[in-house]
Image (cartoon, rainbow, N blue to C red; front, top):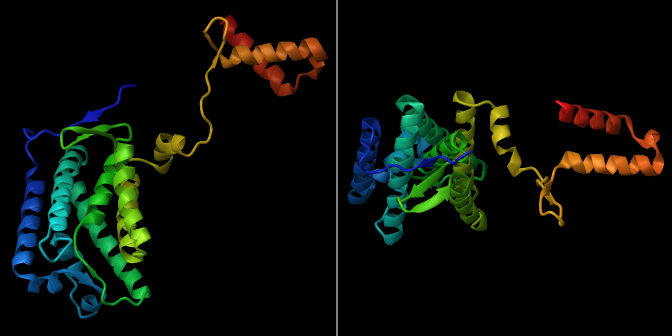
Length: 274
């Protein structure tokens, strides 16, 4: 089976709903940099939620990850918008707009509230959350589960198998939080990943179907090919089994064969006759 290659070119029009989401996010982020006094009202924290700022689980998604302009801010923002456009366009085409927006906002809201709960357990009321990384991870996870064998061209140049890309992005983010002991952001991003898995199961594929696609990743058994050194031809497993059984019969007699060995021999011989 040939691998599917997904490459979204600039000639393909960006869906209107996604374009509006990108524009409003960009506007809010620029406004937050110009007028940083709005950030405490829009970002998500334990203290402000206790004060009744109930809109924050939604509005924090539109804020930048940093409250001041810097080189790292530029890099993070560029990647965030690129992934939002890249995977957002692909998912809207695959799963319809309303499901995409449900995935984006529901994953962000639930992950945000979960991180606030973890922060309250750790007695970190000053914890403050901004950005949409959990929503982006949920999008990437969903796309990967729907297209496990796909290859994407990142920035139209760099080929990535989706599984490799997922491990690279999620593994890198989680590793950074682990080595810094940042359990709140770790739980926040993990909640986004888990939401992507549950969303895919709820709307598209059963756990059994997903397991069939990915069980090879957890299997320790590897397919071993056996070759005849004299001829260079591959020896089939059935032929090897028959040879072993005939050797056993010649040395120990037919009675030495077990019920399952006899059954398998009959099955192989019957298939050869057909």
